Length: 198
Ligand SMILES: NC(=O)c1ccc[n+]([C@@H]2O[C@H](COP(=O)([O-])OP(=O)(O)OC[C@H]3O[C@@H](n4cnc5c(N)ncnc54)[C@H](OP(=O)(O)O)[C@@H]3O)[C@@H](O)[C@H]2O)c1
Image (tube, rainbow, N blue to C red; front, side, top):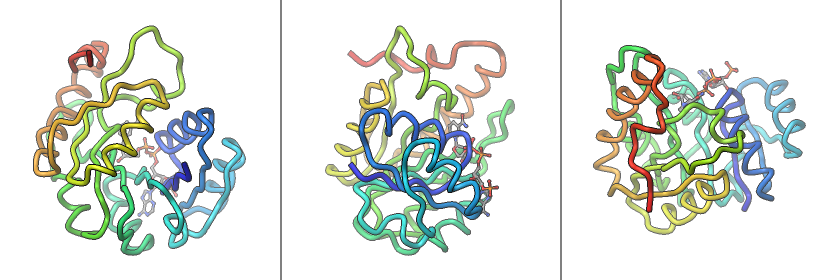
């Protein structure tokens, strides 16, 4: 697939690395052209200005800080018809209080995009480290094709995709992030917080 990555931080790097290893084509856009170039070079991908990242993408990852989501969505444009992966968390790390539902906000901001909540529960390193157990990636979304595309991308980084339900249930998943991150801060393996997929 052709995957657009919006953002150049830890999660963008980890998933771009994993998807590149799986044979996907990566296009990176970020507010810092230097960081976008560095990430693209690292994964053997390409750089584009943010408004062009979704142009011919099969899926786009919105890997920016919650506070940067409005700016990035404004720059990225309408994203109509694009499976848009939302891994963002608007929680206080270590405390777990959810300040807003990112998925609801994103879906309202770019209503033409097919938002899929996914990849928000576990530390980014999970997606590049070989492990002896499969990570369950619970997803929410309203578009079946987008869920199928993202499910493939979950599998390609060693995860097991499971659909909880439509985007109206994303808030339940986002609350789980506060719980899981809180456990991780206490030294508990965060993978143990989510049931294993069959
Ligand atoms: N890292 C993880 O383990 C993990 C796991 C699950 C979910 N997440 C979620 O994934 C998202 C990214 O996390 P991360 O750890 O990759 O963060 P990060 O390493 O701090 O990177 C944040 C990214 O957001 C960009 N950004 C911030 N404000 C922006 C703005 N106003 N306009 C455009 N871009 C902006 C940053 O650009 P600059 O570099 O130019 O500042 C950077 O590319 C977050 O929402 C986080 O909650 C992260």
